[in-house]
Length: 221
View (tube, rainbow, N blue to C red):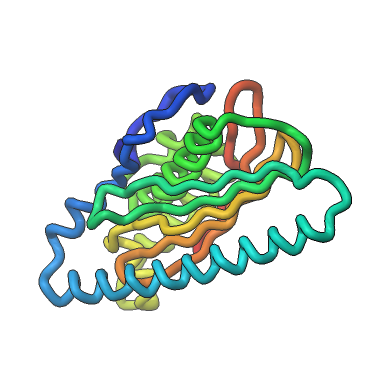
């Protein structure tokens, strides 16, 4: 699947576990020179170790919560989604704050929507896509803020700091998604992504509107 693919399914049915989340990373990788590839691989390895440490700490925290709880632990979902570059994968953890059961396929597809939305938002910031491409899954006021960031990045490159310049062209790779479903209508997400060799953290909030989840807040920095 591509980051700018028009994903149209409102409800999530059974997922194909062999499906690969392709965000155009392989093409970016092939265009980089040897030094950039080496730096990129080193950054990916550092991010993998960081994500593993974060996952271990998260599991420890969940374990402490479960030991202290006097009732059955609330449902949570963990999984990995392969990325279409160098055998990398995205790890996700979704914790529910209420009693409910979702299928693993539903949660997996919801996480994939989160990644596609974040990567598509970056493409809009880079002026590679129009803001209207986000209309189905991002609220209008949120799209306006993304377009404001696009106007900033389109400014004089001599006046922009290096991290902002890298947002113009560096390949986007998601590494980790941690989400908390507060209720059946609200999902809050923390995600770890990298732009080239530079790690970034972001936050998103999705609210359910009818049959679909819509982003009403996104902060990528």
